[in-house]
Length: 119
Length: 119
DNA sequence: GGCATTGTCAACCATTTGGTTGAGTAACTT
DNA sequence: AAGTTACTCAACCAAATGGTTGACAATGCC
Image 1 (tube, rainbow over the protein chains, first blue to last red):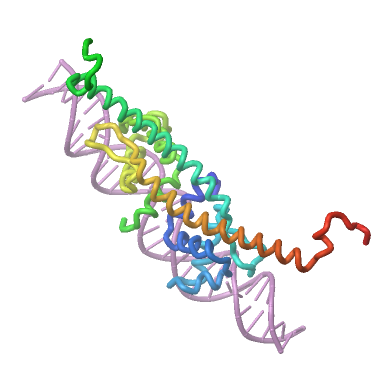
Image 2: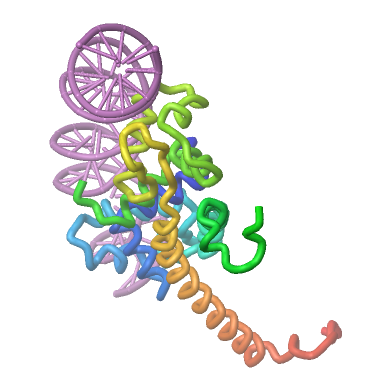
């Protein structure tokens, strides 16, 4: 329960049913009953799933029977985390590519085109 | 075990230790032992975490003692999923904002001019 | 107020998860 | 070839997860 925000968000989206709920809520708000209808599980189970999404801040409701709505801001938290390491990793690969290219050049000077083979 | 890819990826990142492993691997490849060193848990526990990351396709290794490396492509899978619903949701809110603005205009024309506190 | 509908809470169950320790295997070193 | 080092596998454990059913609470309608 005392998990950090990001852990709760990722954990919430690790379940296909919950991802489907999010997907559906992205196109329209809906009540618990409406949301539960298509699935082959009890209403209580869906209610639990919604609680997980709510605890993760992905979803909110004004009152008990009010329609559930998606909180789009939380997505930013994820994309920021992801992009950070994605970019970092990509940069590394670029550097690696550069390094490999360099090594290629210096170990096989034949390839290094016309000028400066004179080392 | 027969979970879909996206579920495995999100589940893998739902753990703070595993997110930290990913963060560290984004700046440099490292062996299991190196990765395990900073944490207060057994090497076996970290080995298990790495297996989870590997099963999710977030990480790979050429052989047993080879350095672990981050597979940056998997991030695309996540960002695509996220962006899709994020954008969808944002569009809805824009439409809602427009609708509310419209209603505001037609139902309370008093407010639509600059300053008429004269009531 | 009374009743039906809608949703949540509680208790329970099976499975998964994250950790442990101990034993085994694979790979370098000499 | 033998020994050390690095890692994984297996068995086990406690806690969390996703599901169930049954009882309860809150809202909307007569």
